[in-house]
Image 1 (cartoon, rainbow, N blue to C red):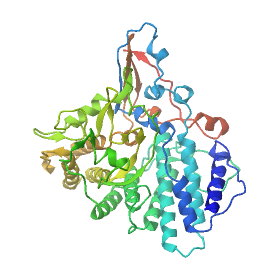
Image 2: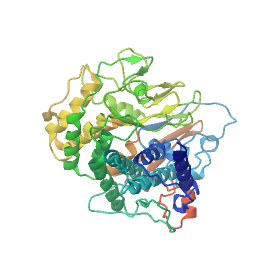
Image 3: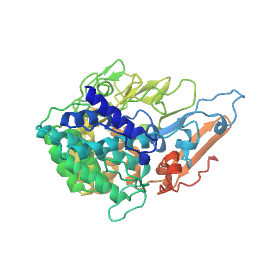
Image 4: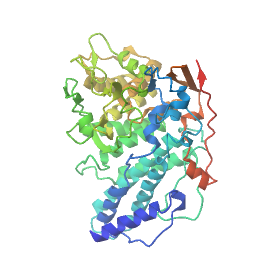
Length: 496
């Protein structure tokens, strides 16, 4: 145990000796010699934590969030743009560099994610030739590290990079670092295609190495989680045949969903929120990750008596528009008449998502529902309407009471693609999918409105606007002149 403590401390010093990951320096460290050492190191420091950082604001750029104004007649308050202290304010209004506003604070997500990547690099390199008799565990652990590194780089691209477009590369990727040791050089952005090539190679390696027969643990990267990530990565890259191959293989081993008649317990559906906090079992959840303190309140923990961010009216409307007479979507409504549903509840008198947030803890997840949506989108894009409708019906029959369903004749290809995207918005809202989806679907025009007692104001994104891309953190840009800032335009907040 003392040896492992030395390893963990050394690697922690190695990774945090400077706040900028590109300035790492190597102290004297104890080198792990056994697979179990690397496995524990990976579990301790190679996973996403989501404890701090701008990813908590990633929903605020999207159309799933709106500003909820509570009129306050107090004349001591000036115009809203002067008095508001709500976290995420400048993110919501698409400002050029929201981190400069001390209300939003420092962007830690970048550094924390590269720290986890550095651990993955050490594990991948160290396990290549480690002298250990447990070959099965060696391959499995190395596969976990590849899957986690793919996950981390995809998260970075979703925040700080442009979307992948087949046949057209872009300079706006993120820096690639795969070396397990510090290097005396400044890193530039790699291109989008270069980063995705690494992500794709990592997830392919993961699927070749991870033990598919090993008992699934919800807090460890496993074969099912890697398969879900593989379908997502290939979907983003428009490799639809690969999405279909992987997704159908996944469903052969794991396809169970909660039943649509599942009930609420104390305002919480035990099949979602509570299970994602480790209380009970949801059959479709295969991997839990992330934990956030009570300050994670951009949307999830609204304050009583104050203006707040809440789930948008357009999101709530998209739930209702797909229902037929007699159907009831448990994700948004329930038959008891109270305000809680599978996905939503009321926090401090404000409407708030609760499917992944309970008792000041946020848990994100990988689950079977996403596989069904990835498959439906891939089939729709390839024109296989019947297969897409089959997967949509299966998913929706788990979510909707008295489900009637659809038949292929209800759609043409264009309308099916639109419906599939809307279903993705319904099912995956507030799981950090919407920003990536809007980006890969062309970064459409978007408007956010705010209000105070002086009137209403708005800020807008244009088609293809760089406002969809977060700035790489200010401190990183100040220390590394090779890092190019994204050319986000100065945004006008205009009265309406």
